Image: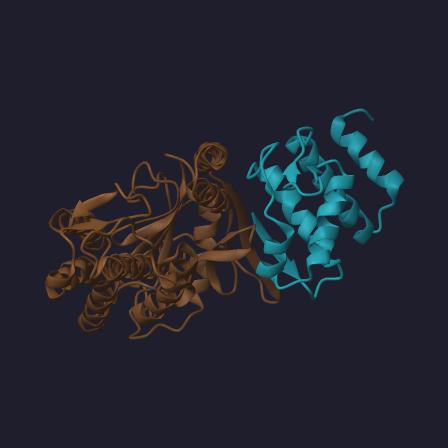
Length: 119
Length: 345
């Protein structure tokens, strides 16, 4: 799993680490049941605090993407849906782009409906 | 298993000679205690033959006795078999960066224990025409022998010496090698957990046998088997990591690096479709000649590092393409001694 973080971005490092795992699942690098690297190894590799990595993993657990149990390896959840995750990630990017372009939620809904051909 | 940090042979002839010299000395250090132990009993019996009885009492049991020639032959035969087998193994692994130092403490411990036992047998039977039983001196009791063996093992480890320095790789990845784009200000790493189910299975079987031995057999063989099983199990789950320092294979419990290859020893990295070159049928940390690494499964993708000195490091791991690309990208940033960038790959 390739993890890239950029401290100059205005995004918490934990979020960036969580995004890297999401990206790996979307690309198919990880399948349900696969082990994530131990948080301590990721922290060592990136030169960040262990708790930063654990916060990232915790986010993924709250999203239902990974299973974390005390004393056991963190694994990709059986319910992890790569396609759904990809759509969610694209929607996130789309919302960011819409905000930067001055569009509000209604404008975006209209644009999506137009793309579906429902308006 | 010791940590591998830049061990192996050099690419240039002088370094190879240095390594051969070092290895020759190390081989002598490893084998010497066994050869000495082989000679001690015959030498003592020959020197003191006028003061020894016809048969040697071997234990507290009065019937447990052997003639000195047979005792000498049996002792020498066992030690000779061990010495020859170890010498053959050392020769096979003469270019391996793994496992050429760790036999030293074991041979020194075993040699010391054998010498103490021989000395104890001779002194215990000395000037006793009809010994009823053999009672070892205090320094030949199991606890004392264990201490002597431990100290001797430590001496052997020190005498075997550290590993020679490796030359810095003078070849860099060619233009066709995979790479990734890294933006400034970014910190990038690649991590992947690897589980060897076969190593777990073997550890489980050993643990079972060990526990059976603990409850059914006298001695410490069962306990040692359980300890071996635990050591094996600790190698079954590892993480391969590519970061700023190089490529690391680390075990989780206890947390330590099993293999560490710094970037300046890597010529280039590739993703291979199979772990060709690693010894077949061996799992966990393995080595064969100039190839070493970690095998978790029989086949499947592998990360292959071509190192200085003609060595290769191979890890069976998923997504080796990304790891290889990151390594090659990092290598591009290193200074090139002799400036042969892209000369070969």
